[in-house]
Length: 483
Image: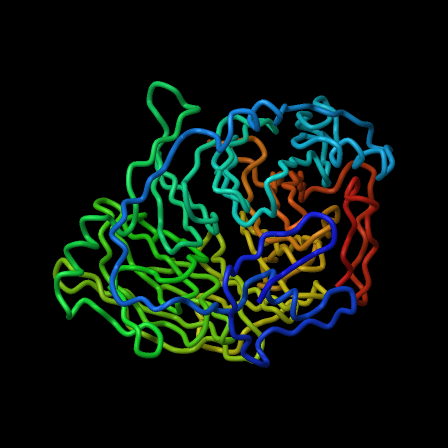
């Protein structure tokens, strides 16, 4: 299935045709063709060539740009504008420049500790295609797009970059000094910041390692049936990696793939410990937490819970139960920071959640989006949901377990594909009322938002009522959602 759009051609996640199972993705909008939307957001598996033997070519990565002349053309520019600037005035410089960083608020307003501002702070645009993944740590932001480059941003400016010679970046997670990236080619690459130069990132490993592939390929018992009569070594993903998650102690890394499996990796030596045949369709999200539990969500419409147990020095995961079973695809999963609630995003626009004590009971639901929820992020008592409808809903869990939608962040012109959130004061802060939210979109931009849970002085909060909402104009001022 090929995907084409007017103007700039968007990257087609699937380079070869994929079957389209019926009844999994629902889209009730007239603005988008359902067939193109399913293909663009990649909820489905794609057809793969016959895989009978492992590829033994070494993965070659380079810390250089694709093109030196191209690098010179990507000149950074900082564009400042007042809050009252019109949408056309704001966007015209971005469409003319191959790379730009637009600051919505002045430095004084953004850094004022007493300013209870919620809304757009900056927009980062690099004409490399849609943004599929991002991760934040302190004042550093890592983004993955259609290109093979992972961009590093600091204080709203491009700080550094590193790249792989193959594989669109679908997922990014950070553990200590190491950055793990999941790619379209089914590989996980591990990077580390240079001690001498913090702007240099070196590749220190690839999962699975070349030596492990050679070793496993020698024994027929290591080949597992992956599709029809085709076989592949069990330590390898043979389709795109869609999600990465660490165990609570960060000793294990879980990878979810469109090949319907979840693989378990040792962070210390990069070895694959286990492969779980988890679902019947593409896995879109995997998340670990809650005292050794692992949750996987798939395009087959299920959320499954797994229990980790240790057998000597080995780890083994056992299926517990289906937490959710529906016709619509499960697109994203997240566990809140307190480890008390599991949240699930669905292609029907709903958020489902389970309390820790009632994991296998009926899920609670939240309705704040008109179209599919693609991504989730959690911080403190807040949960953020990004959707195909281009909006980000900010939910707060109250003491009684109820949820309220505090506001809706509007400003993207394409589906919101990934989210990350950090304390606005940076690492080591005890602030729990102000957050910096990063959102990546299929409109090829990253937006930075400031979210305050405190009501600004003199402002009266709107009381929830009904299901309507007041929308903001181009994301300058947040809009409030009424439940």
